[in-house]
Length: 299
Image 1 (spheres, rainbow, N blue to C red):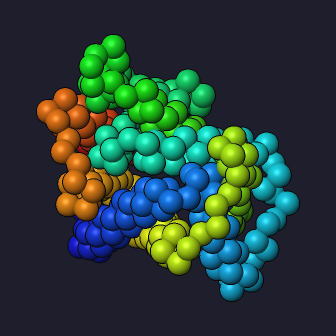
Image 2 (image 1 turned 180 degrees about the vertical axis):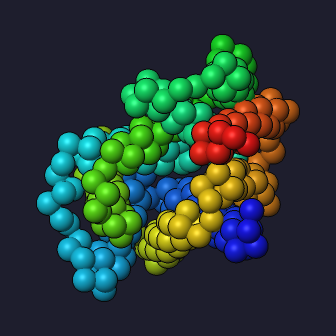
């Protein structure tokens, strides 16, 4: 690896870590806002703010905020999966401990690997299959179905994780001409009708006070910053070197849960989270090694 590549990977790792901190803070603000506002209202307000930010970013770059390509089949599927992931995960962080919801979310890369094999025909060896099974075992340890510690609302986190994984798979098939700002507009725009549906099911909106507006604004600001840093990280360093830093999100989420919300993750949650992260890191490193061998077969 050249010095330039090493420097890019180091900077990319820092950017990815900053991005995960932004997303963890976003979750904290959403959870706090949902204490005084219906989850659907928080989601719709958050979506409107994020859409406005990325639309302004697209216009500043001379790009249309809503190009016709957004109506292509892959992008419509992506929007549906985004709505499922965001809506379910918002319910999860509002109704369950932030640390456990975030731990379950870390299984998304494993589902992406599984989906890539099923949808795109990518080869997955037996070692990565074992890692995927281990990761799902970690999720089951966190959920504890059938045991006294089981929380039915935690299934929203599972649904959210599956929605995010499917969204990432759909993004692979998105037209390459679309910029990250345009994808950001589409991703946040779909939260408005999603929030409206949840709001209709919960019984209507509540007039927000200054504190609630500040919390939603903080969530939108942290979410937009996290997305911006995520994009910068993926363009600065090598994907295989930068992606493992995604798991720092769980570290930040657990720290915020303990220090701000007074959560106390039990041994099953901590053990399950460690198993999910270990299996995910192994899968990522294994994929990186296989790509390196394929690009340099004489090595």
